[in-house]
Amino acid sequence: MLLEIDDIHVHYGKIAALKGISVSVDQGEIVTLIGANGAGKTTTLKTVSGLRELSSGAIRFDGADIGRMPGHKRVLVGIGQAPEGRGIFPGMTVEENLLMGAYARKDDPSKELAEAYELFPRLAERKSQAGGTMSGGEQQMLAIGRALMAKPKVLLLDEPSMGLAPMLVQQIFSIIEEINRRGTTVLLVEQNAQQALQIAHRAYVLETGRVVKAAPASDLLDDPQVRAAYLGGDLGEDASEDGVVSGAGGGADGPGAPSGGEDSAAKAEKSDRPDKPEKSED
Image 1 (cartoon, rainbow, N blue to C red):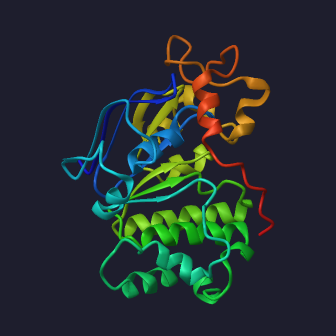
Image 2 (cartoon, rainbow, N blue to C red):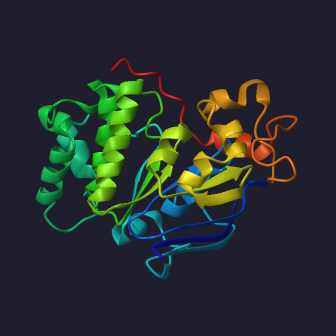
């Protein structure tokens, strides 16, 4: 198994954000995490990449325990991330942004730069343009391309379709599939559960910091509870309208059972996330 997340617990102060999450990702897979806003998806990715500290549990990568490894060293062993909100350097050119992804490497990144331009021809056309002047879709391509410059064994993608026009959403998912075909394993968090499940091999449903379902993605697409709870629309902030989020723990009511309101862990994860970008016009 390439990546093993074993019973991890994470806290924001005294608030429990992750309550025993276990997820596995094998070499060559696309695995997706779905769930309502505040379920713990982004926190899980941040904990894998080293941006959040474990309270307990273990994370193993390529057979080695990395749970206490600093984030910059996780990049060197093969974990790359394109964060929610893209996080590009707006004043740098496209090419400078891409090269920042290879900053920790000691070898020549020319091969990876050429591959990034092959995968994203739009970036090649605009390599001298400032990243902050690009459209939302182009910035998302840049964020993914920058993460690939580190030659990751596993790519963590957090909400890659957020704020994009429908035509660009399809393009981004096609690119994710191509990245996977070229040999990079993908762990995907995505508000568009329908699209995510269509390209993933396996999937996990998260609710209030716990895994409540795990199955092949095709099975979850046909699961009546999952369809009712998660496939009727986006899973972003709009999914918790009026403060109603999924029920905790996957009990008798199953995934998607409404609770009386948003719990503290959901609010804590929201506060740790960047503001939702405005919808792109491209």
